[in-house]
Amino acid sequence: MTTEERIRSRARELGFDLVGIAPPGSLRPPVRSIVSVAMNYHAGGPALPCGGDLRGRIARFARGDDYHLVVGARLRKLCGFLVECGARVARPYVDAGPLFERAIAQQAGLGWRGRNSCLITGGFGSWVVLGEITTDLALRPDASASGDCGSCEACMRGEAACPTGAIFAPGIVDAHRCIAYWTIEHRGWIPLDVRPMLQDMIFGCDICQEVCPRNRAPESVAAHPEFAPRPEIGAHPRLLPLLGIGEDEFRRLFRRSGIKRAGRRGLRRNVAVALGNAGDARAVPDLALALRDPEDPVLRGHAAWALGRIGGSCASDALRDARACEEDPRVREEIFAALEASSAAGQQR
Image 1 (tube, rainbow, N blue to C red):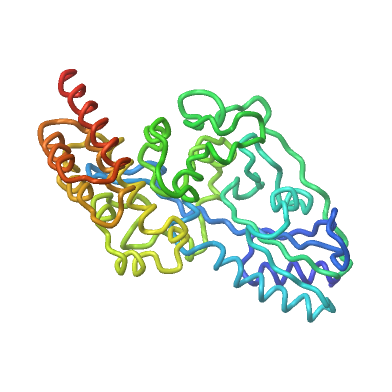
Image 2 (image 1 turned 60 degrees about the horizontal axis):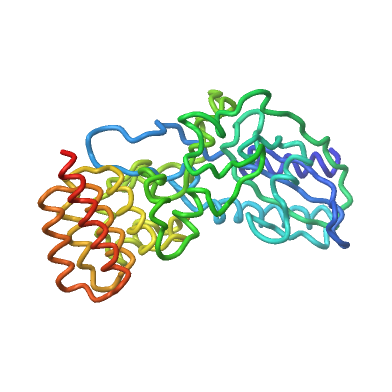
């Protein structure tokens, strides 16, 4: 076996579904090659919540263990193998560092870039997470992958397209308009005009992938067990328990989970927005409690917004009670606006 064949074989033994080799591109010496790998994270199951409970959506990549941990552990073992093959340099990367991972994956033959900017592979669609190793081994690169979306614009046009319009040109995504940004990376207050577009998504977003015809192949329904939804949370968790979750319970439920990137405060804020978008009066008592949370003004403000969206006498009573004792000026603004929204909703009924 050649060194390249040995590396591919070892990578598959370690659990990587796809592996290829790319040239170093603009990386400086001693880097002479890049090993690119991918793991399928699609664990099957419906895209939308089922049943009558108030439930939210978690992006498929975050339903199990944090992919940074899963891929990183395997990459470190593969780095050890590269050293056995004679490498003096073998550095692993998982969604970090000065690497354009999707471009590298395409150069390594793993897949091609779709209109939604995701890497689309032949066997798993875009349901893959990526990793790379830079090395001083002079490896023969694989042929670059090619492909295109043809006339399909499902992720960009129509009712099922990206609701925030983040995909503003083929293959180009405004990251700061993406639902994944607002529910994961953004800290603090979510703008009023953005909140309705988040729908029931509380961490990440899969819309541009769910609508992609390339993701409907049966091969994409077998994932690694590490990426399976956690039994206590599921793919579509119940929202009300998460709205009131304590710090200790948050750490227990989301140990080794990527959802910790949003933090307890970010998650509860997102849940409040999802409940407001659901417009279900069953959420009013829990939102009224969140409206009195002494530690988190951002949660209080988003809970007020949600109560205004739901409307009704109970929601209005909770907002008026909170108005009488709220001291934070931003939260007070949210409460006054919510009372107006609740009154308008009542008149429309």
